Image 1 (tube, rainbow, N blue to C red):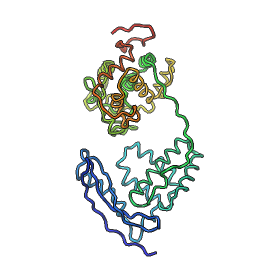
Image 2 (image 1 turned 60 degrees about the horizontal axis):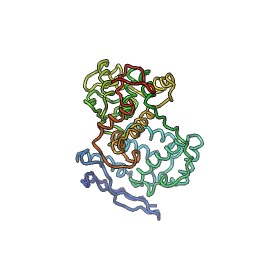
Image 3 (image 1 turned 135 degrees about the vertical axis):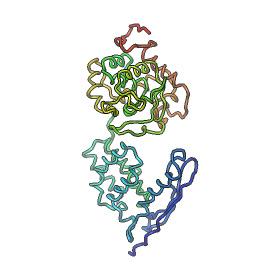
Image 4 (image 1 turned 180 degrees about the horizontal axis):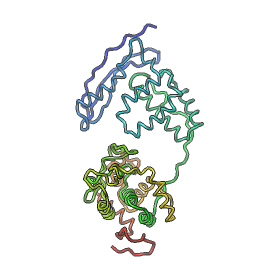
Length: 390
């Protein structure tokens, strides 16, 4: 068959539409009859309030390069999965968080041996199904679902670039049944105080921030003294295995109200801390870098739980405890969604709205936790029927 002549490079100009930068481009897309047709598509580059015009142009060029860079006489049909993975790392990976990139790299270690030499255009749904079935013989069901999700994401990029007409990993596939995850362990107030009083600093304060402010582990690691206000904590960074990044989602950039118990504990922490500058980390280690709480659960948190004879909890269990206590304390679902930094309302009763009662929420949660009394951290944990003094 006669080789098609290489198409001229494209230089699309981004334009604004509904507070988004967009641009139009053309790709060669395979048709059902085997022919290749030139089609026009639109790509969203980002929000206009977060990206300048020049930055939008850079993103457009980065996106269009894999589409334009075709060797003479070589069409998309010759591209292999190994080519696709290489292009993905160059063009797509820099836009993702480190955690997302690592999850893709984990999947690539399974995908590339199976499909690396395959032409992307020749991969069909039966091939994907066979791959997932074989993977299910070695991997846990949850891992097979993760591999499928990353393969689908990778091939969706190939479809955007016009390398394939349809994504063979999309749609319904037969996957192993997921295992039931461990039920979240929710602490009772008396159990929390037992745990806090037996933990050594700084882990007692970490637990308080997780249970009484609902912060994620990585958000706690990245807290700086400049983030601590008179009655709020600002969340605008997160740490992932020592690497600082933005929080989990756009909605996770938030300001969380804190009550007097946490305020008092933070003041005590600053008096004892080695690094107290505004840009220093609240939980800095001796090199003035963020603490890594990844190994703190098995080394400190769970042994402390065993010591006081309460269920062994994870960091995420503490965040679930915060949510449960907030609901029991009567905090509105809208306020809980905003305090937790949920991107989707599906995690907080499917309600889309914002309220201004965060201060009341923080006080209500502490009030529920303390049974209406303010607990000094230096006294023994409260027991049922024991009065606490202010």
